[in-house]
Length: 577
Image (cartoon, rainbow, N blue to C red; front, side):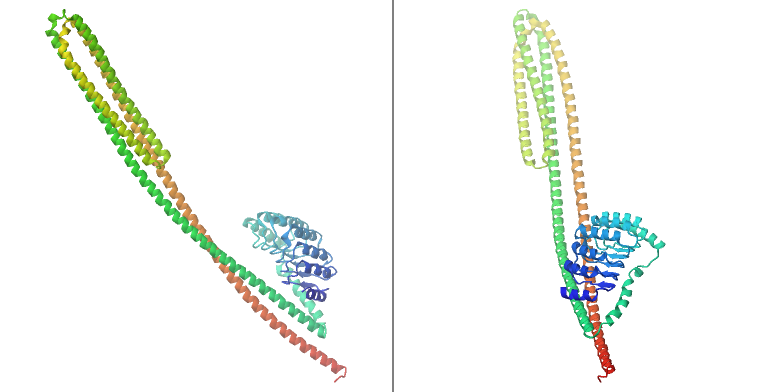
């Protein structure tokens, strides 16, 4: 290919327009081209579209173009000048010193926003450049800001193509508004800026027609061969792009299938989560009902214990009143012989007083035991509620077993209390019976019995005050139970709120999945449309190549006919015929 390129460059050594589009000359070809261009004072248009030239090859070309004072158009689309920052820095230096360039094409050259900064600085100093093509480069927001500032400072530039350059819409619209103002003050059409191609073609036709005989045929054959190679390269490139697009489409299809599978998996997980939530809710409601049943049973047992305690107190007061009445009655009957049994009555009275104190202490211990049991029950109820909140239903069976054991323990304690009360009542009845047998000795101590009666009345008042205190404590416990119920209701509200938040989060996740699926579907449709457009472009390229091949054949035949006629005429003029 280097021989063919060298031959072509040799033919175009002093041409005004050099077009090497899609020939893939690379950096080596660019170096060879620079050797032919550096002394071409007539060059006005250089087209190097699609030649895989990097920054190093471009450096050679720019060095050679410094000797071309008439250069107006430099077309460098579909190369790799932006592979590093050297290429754009070289172009920026060239723009600062050049006074003839009107259009530069740099579309699809792997330029970035950082690369654009030296180019933007050069645009501020250049006053001849009218058009700049930066399509299909990843300039981004940073590149858009540089270009917006440069266009605002340079009043000469009229056209700046930024399609597909990833510049934000706001900056692109601002740049276009500034360019509209420039074009209003300098209304030059873009076709006029690029019209140098037509003039160059018309000027080159006499040079080509001036070639004689075999040189023209050889040149046309070389051009046909180059066009054939060029067409083959285009076909191969289009096929590669089509294969790449098909591969991407397959990859996108696989990705969509994977996303669908993930979506189905997420939906299954969501359904499982909803099922688990419903199951947990049912378990919590069941546990709540069981807890309510346990609470009601506990309250019923507390009421039963209070009723038993009240019955014991009533029985105690009744027995005490009956004993006092009987003692008073018999004391009046036995007042006559009180002097003989005074000492015995005094001893017995002290004994009864001591026994009464013992009974009162036992009664007090029973009451304190009941209060302790009630406080223990309240504490256990609070601990149970705390464990229910902290362990989140996971230790429900253990708590239920422990609670049943404690309930059985409380029932056994209650039975033990009832048994002890019954024993105490039986013992008290036995002692009253024994007192009845010995009450006759009380006549000697009638005055002391009256004082003792006053003491009994005072003690009864104290017992009544204690009963009132116990009732007050029962009311306090009822208020505590109501407080626990309110706390349980608060916990239920919190659980319901968490369930609602989980439901909202699930709905949001489903909406996001739906949006993502729609986005992937739109992307797949765009890829399909792009494939169709590329196929259409490929068909049009085939049709164009066929047309060009027919045109070249026609021109070759016409050229051969003209050459034959010219030779025949020359022979006739020279008298060979």
